[in-house]
Length: 433
Image 1 (cartoon, rainbow, N blue to C red):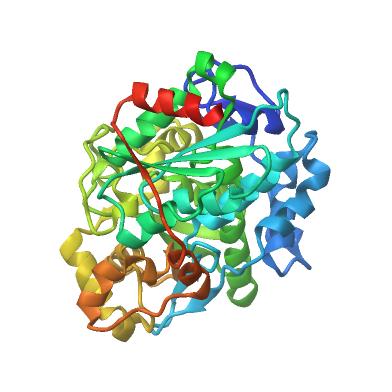
Image 2 (image 1 turned 30 degrees about the vertical axis):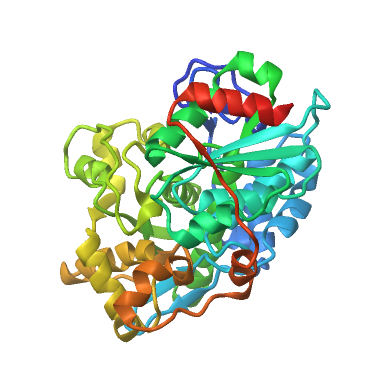
């Protein structure tokens, strides 16, 4: 399998080279040159997540040095479950993606990427610095996946004051080879600075760099696996496709669902759930695509005004009319999110985080419009990560899962940095030294 840039002006690369590069030289994102096709019987006998992932991803690893390592990579990455649970109302389900070490869906992709990067050949003895911009959950997942790994350093950029207190604590709790940089700006500033670093060839000659954002194939490809696994589980029982409502900010998780469907997995409708950052709902309602300044919301991990992975959506569906037919997008503002959190236990039988609440709000809207198909809302994070938002709404403490509690007990340290590339470049050179 070869990988090409969404912008079409870079040479095709094998998987290992595309993983190492992160971003294509023309500034585009790497995508597979073609997509394999599956049918549900292709996965007969594969019940658990790791073997489903290995079978699904085998064509994407074909002819690459990592192909023989794929089963071991999947076994290393997917050590926790992604259960599909029925909710209180018939036909409603939740796909729980928060059972990993940092209580967010990003753990799947970050651990998979780390397992891949450990196995890639290196041209230098210098440590590889993983540069990651985060709106809340990505940074902690990447920090946990790479913490203590020889030959790697991590620089996490996050918007100061625009992540939850517990998210901020997680980001600074790893220490060692993981550095947390709190940026005086928005997530879009963090993302812009990270992309500039990855495209700076002079810097990369001094300080070898990699990425663990959703622009990385090593994050995107494994996220297809839990959609495949849950859709197959549902299909084997019902004989019908499973439909999804996916909370989304930078669009990586949603694109993974779209790719799984495009590869033939039994996935039906895909509805995107946004917060007050309306760039996607506006586009799917017919407006021209245009990046917007991000707006701070209580679903902070989705506060993105320029979603990077929109380029990948347009690669899958080059025609805007076809893209708008393939997906829908809907927004939920802070008031709607609060109402969903307050009502979630009585309405659905489970407490939801602010991001998952955008999905339950959209599901309620789809039901009101008469859609009676089976849907799964994608629960992207554990509600305990957002105690400052949730506890005042429900009037009690949220139970903290053990892995998250252990991180919160560790000391945390971060460093301030200006929202400009020069400041980041200097910091990366110093970190690599």
